[in-house]
Length: 142
Image 1 (spheres, rainbow, N blue to C red):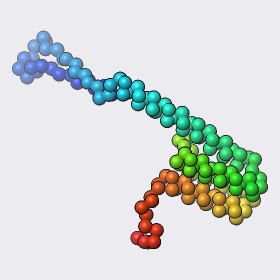
Image 2 (image 1 turned 135 degrees about the vertical axis):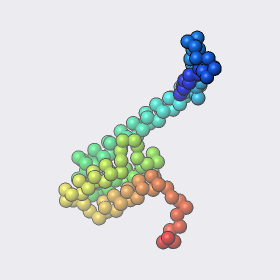
Image 3 (image 1 turned 90 degrees about the horizontal axis):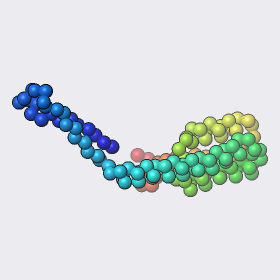
Image 4 (image 1 turned 90 degrees about the vertical axis):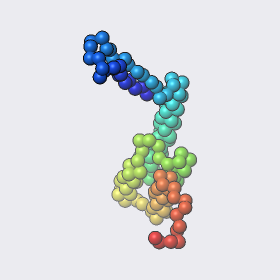
């Protein structure tokens, strides 16, 4: 990040044309720090894209291929496990997207109780990963 400031020496004393603006520049980051920061950002984006690809594969399988109770439950368990491993959802996949996908599948008719339990466990895991309030006093309603 580079900032440029212009300073006019003696601007109140002498208003002649010989006074010129002198640029003063400084950098908050050195070039090595900037390159390291860019490298970290690109590495983060790359990892997020890999994680998103894993989620997308499972979501596609859940949406298109899964027909039985066992397949539906396994896909929801896979999503929950991916959420645990990655520490939440990757960039580009939102909780609402998963909820909408599951509700579309649920609306098709076949939705056993065990699959509903798996879906609720997935939503609880996503919520926990997005806001891990471990200090919450469960017994206190306030």
